[in-house]
Length: 134
Image (cartoon, rainbow, N blue to C red; front, side, top):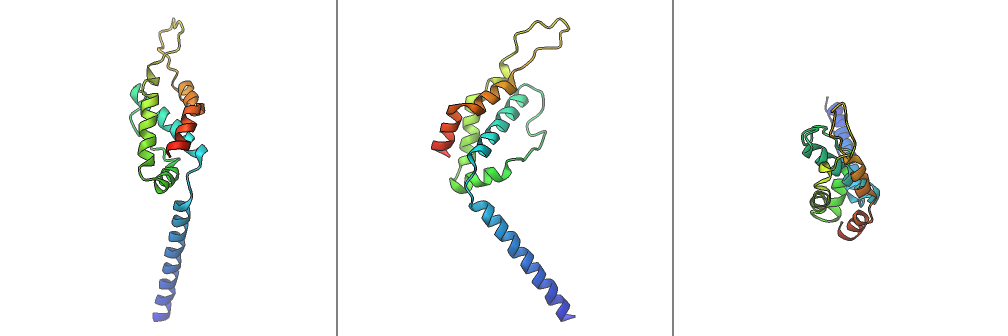
């Protein structure tokens, strides 16, 4: 019986060691700039669709860039918060813009959120912010 217990203990220790190594290696990598830009796009879309009333904040529960936020904060404390504030400041009113079109069926108004957020994603200003601040 003690031999089998030791085998389980060794297996548990090996698993714990492996998980710590994987976590440490992921935490030690700097955030990829393209991933940070994509996360900023996700924030822009989420914030503006929530403000427009199309869905509630965090309704989608999408954590595609969770590891990116960890890498940002491991590289510089508070980096994720700074990115959140920057995106909010730069894109706060995107939900207000409407597509200027006549809608005889009265289905509108139609928004331009995606196009504006893509413009922000491609902007030199976002790239500069990421390079200089994060």
